[in-house]
Amino acid sequence: MLRFFFEFWESTRIALASVWSNKMRAVLTTLGIIIGIVSVTGMATVVNGIEKGFEQDIASLGTNVIYVEKWPWVRGPSTKWWELANRPNMTADLADKLNQSASMVQTATAVVSTARTLKSNTESISSARITGAQANYPEVHEIDLSEGYFFNEFDDQSARHVAVVGAGVAERLYPFGSAFGKDLNIGGSKFTVIGILKKQGEATEGPASTDFTVQIPFNTFKQQYGTRWRSVSIQAKIGDGFAIADAKDQMRGVIRLARRLDVQESDNFEINEQESLRAAIEPIKNAIFAIGIGLTALALLVGGIGVMNIMFVTVKERTREIGVRKAVGARRTTILIQFLVEAVVICMVGGLVGVGLAFPLSMLIGAVLPASLDLTTVFIAFGICVAIGITFGLAPAWSAAKAPPIEALRYE
Image (cartoon, helix red, strand yellow):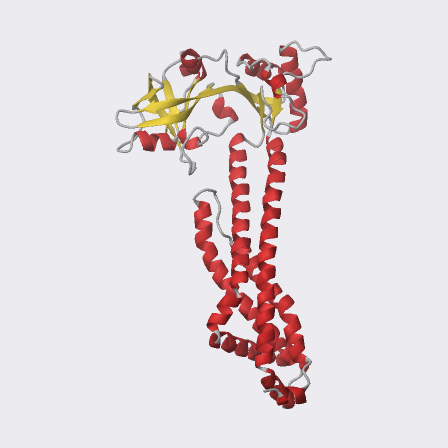
């Protein structure tokens, strides 16, 4: 073991000296490796970013919250959109039915939304999501407020013009002070800001961003914008200890009974949950991963062939050195390890450059997706470098190891 260690150390020293003496050649040789490593890390960062972003969005839906709505979140190839469009809109009274008759439902609430322009005295936001929510909304979804309070039952029943705004709305419309207690113009109507949500950190601005939403009492929304032609979302939190599947079956029965559906009639509503979104995103994620693996493998193959080519050149250039080393007692294993280590070192140089370029790339990706380059990805990248060095350096190293000493000494 000690002998192997010394041989390995000596081989590493010789390999580093060889790479240093041919710096430009080493860098050009590793271009394929560099591209491959950047591809590996970039692909891993994108996939992780998509997964993290998706999980964040899923978490905002609630782990044990079921949504009863007119439209399914995921449509199959056989789904006919006109049949879905002809379904009756969901109404807020269905939330009351679930609260009264579904024992597995802890709390059900009605939510409806639209997009409107927001204005303060000096600033405006052209498109923000306005959500009408019942007072029991915080019992279904966790509400984190940085300031103020959420509207109560009295605010809802009285249809008061009060609003809870996202952090992005507060920062954008009121840049020089707190938004709490200030007047907010929503689509031409004046509201008072009574609460500010904690910042979620979304990079995008618009109706899809939680930071750029405004929540108002459900009855206020109904009075201002109407709900007759809008489909309400019934959101129900399942009680502890109950299975999601059992709760869905119970909710389906309650809704069917409320809508007076015959046994032979199909559901004219949809029960949505997290798992349907997970199932829909999985093929997309796998497709991105497969494309990334293919492109990465191609780049690494090209890089590996380049390493093999330069190692054959190196063996030819140092044929006489190989003969001298064998003449003074060097074993085949020693020569093999020397050139294998040199191939690995060349690949590691490419890996270092590739990882160095991957960090700024991950920062660019992080500006769009919630992603970062973690240590696991870096270790995988260097592991790939070692594997390529051994795989593509084996043939040149073996040709050096089995070279006849006499023939090698005669080589000019």
